[in-house]
Amino acid sequence: MKLILLMAMTADGKIARSNDHFPDWTGKADKRMFKELTAKAGVVIMGSRTFKTLAKPLPGRLNVVMTRTPEQWQPSQNLIFTAAPPRSVLTDLAARGFSQAILTGGATINTLFAHENLIDELMVTMVPKIFGQGLSLFSEHLEANLDLMETKEIEPGILVLHYRFVR
Image (tube, rainbow, N blue to C red; front, side, top):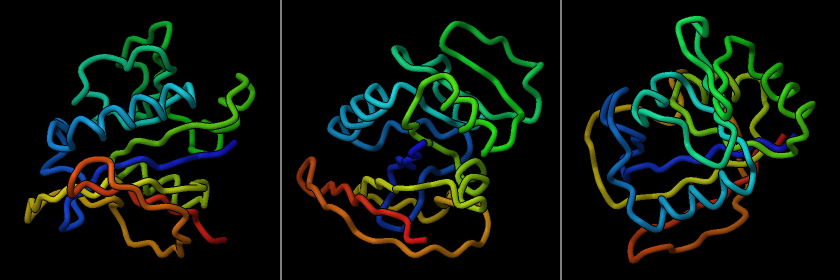
């Protein structure tokens, strides 16, 4: 199963101002790309705080929400809540027939998958903004080497950097 971490980031390396910051700052082209990539994969994985910023499941794809308290949530047809570890989540998705998944954060969930070396690719939309303070891509120290696969300008001044994790 291929796992792609898909995030937008400010020029100072922030993915949000806070845990409840709605991602309305990334631009229309980034939103289109996000929709296309997640629809193509058919499944998106996120943490419960990220899910709360959306307020409802993303339509047309399976939404997997990682939480320590899945019993407190109400699943639906395209919405699963799980406390399973990252590797088990991916194993379950593969058993359901998915060959690819998109990881959309937040920082804590990104870190869980990164610590287990489960992320194959990173696609970062670099948005020309500065928050000064906020959440980083990962919530803890980790080291990884990346290989740049592609760069693309999707709007004037907004770049997508596509990397492969080197193992």
